[in-house]
Length: 310
Length: 269
Image (cartoon, rainbow over all chains, first blue to last red; front, side):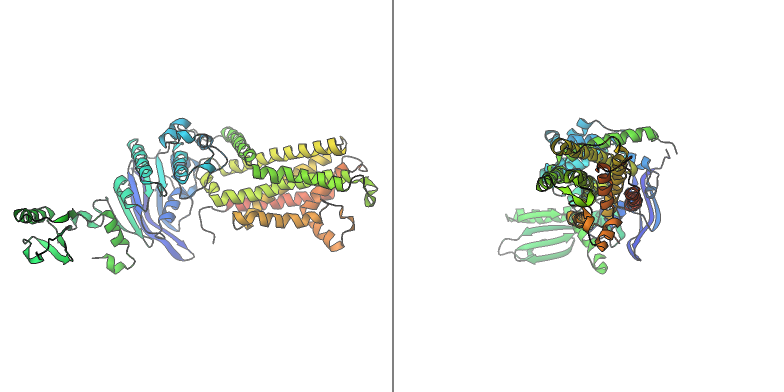
């Protein structure tokens, strides 16, 4: 086996449809054992990129290496070692959960035990139910089971928790984390920012066929360097000018709500709360917040590129 | 590059094909809707038509009984239903549901999957044939003749090959699964009326007759009827019908390979 350091390496990837670039100059790397997340609005080129990595689509240009192989060559060895959970992908509806896991397992020379996989995705109670009779969330868990039965090194998850209720999503996340602890590499695409925040070691954001930002969820788009926002309600009779001076970039009052934007949230919060406690004031719904990954994402993917650059 | 995985061997792949046939069979017989279409309809037609023409003889064919014409005619219809109709609708459904795409992402070679689906179809055709011929023998006294058995088998084999491969190949021209039953029946039903399935085409206008002779339905029905015709001497091999079926089998294989070579990931251009 070629000892490629990275599970995935993409350099200058380009894909065009009748002369129009759907993906252009995309480069990134995914380390072995890492959870990597590709984010982006619909039509950004996420699915095109993933399906090139999975071997479903050919590329127009650039270099792609998945587990040291070129997915465009459709090598069986690669398919032995990769598990794929596609977005909305049907299954033989007349077969039961256990039959399907067994059937897809047979295709692999190295595979996991059927019952072990069914337990892992918590479909034990449904093992003898036909796939056509499962609920949406159960079907998605079956998808995951079918991708895992071949004991893959690398797993592609395309929006794996769409249609899950909050409890089922938490459950899926813990399954994904447990895969990660087994040393599997996971390539995730999702619409849910909390999913990326919770699971991914690194994220990349695509927009209009290009990667516009990449980093850890906490550092994406300079998130860790962004000013914090302090908010609270000011009791009647007090005005913005009464608040002690803090190193703020911005101080506004709207109705009774105060917004203080500051690069020194700890100091600012301390001064404001001390001031309020000394006067026995109740600052309603007091909060300090960093911009969330979602804030950064929305800013990055805004339609007008000029606006995204602040 | 070496691999931690055992190298794929033909022996293992063939055993995968056999396993896959078992799964395909299990899935097939569990779906009742398909059973009605494939098995109940042809047998029902056999009973209805045979009762309507009870005791009648075909004057244009030397006075042979209608039963000797119907049983092989309905058998031809049954073969087309189990191969062409099932394959075309089934493949369109599998394609649209994404099952073909999912299968492509597994280490199972594409040829092995196709071979298993064809193998499963062969078993279904066999069941259909046995059922029709058993009913024909028990209820209508139409028996398989040992002397014309080569003709019966050759026609069934070539016909099944043609209609199975055409069924897969035609999927390329079926835009979506919902349209599949309509398109498939539009291709099959009108032709059956001029193709010696429901009644002898002996008094058909020449133009219609020529159209029917071009397509394989007529060749399959006629080839089987030739093998069951009490007047037939020899092995029951109708060379004109067998030639037509062979040509369509070649067309079917060509269309099937073209369909199978289409990448599933790319959006249709």
